[in-house]
Length: 244
Ligand code: ADP
Ligand code: MG
Image 1 (cartoon, protein in one colour):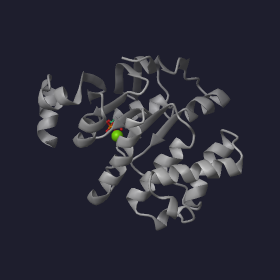
Image 2 (tube, protein in one colour; image 1 turned 90 degrees about the horizontal axis):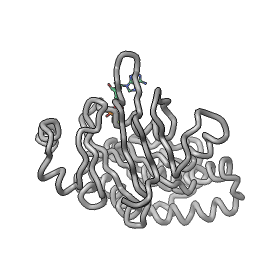
Image 3 (tube, rainbow, N blue to C red; image 1 turned 180 degrees about the vertical axis):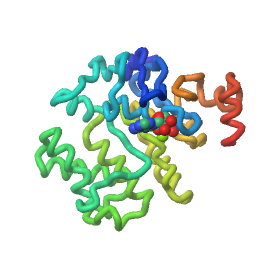
């Protein structure tokens, strides 16, 4: 593997009595694309949220590009800006235009000049195929278009790693591919990505590795080809039997 960019060591997390992350150890190399897959409730979203500190952890460490995530304050805001996150629900600011959605973070957090932020935002909107919608509001766009704007908004912060938590599961089927295509291109361009998805087409096309989680644990890791054709654990076999 290339130099690790994201490193989780012995990470533990409970919600009350529920042990949601059980001693998670995971390294993601620069430019690596890791697909995280597993049954509902297995801790995939908690894992993503822990990586950018939307969720605290009880013990263990998470480092991004050699820096351990601080608890709070300015340093946290900076490190969080290095981690782009795209959720199932698009989470765009409803009362701001598409362009303003994309420029807000760079202007506020990265202190980029408005004109520069807008120029870069238009390039990113072009890249995800929604530049012609820049002056519209989120509700005027389709779900697939909104999710592509959400990706552009994350990219505008120049993140070191992008997290995607089931980015296509709220979309109508005909819009899934337009979002996955953007993600596949991003992967090809060398972005480091952690993607929670059950879209096997994406995993086969873009992932270097599949991480299978169940009950808060990483049960197995393999190349997409090996994982989908030759799962090792009974849990993975059972899970794949249900989704295939
Ligand atoms: P997944 O994304 O794999 O479906 P999650 O990480 O969302 O799993 O959830 C793992 C477990 O933790 C589930 O049992 C879920 O109900 C529980 N959980 C998630 N968030 C919270 C929370 N804020 N408070 C209590 N329990 C939670
Ligand atoms: Mg989830």
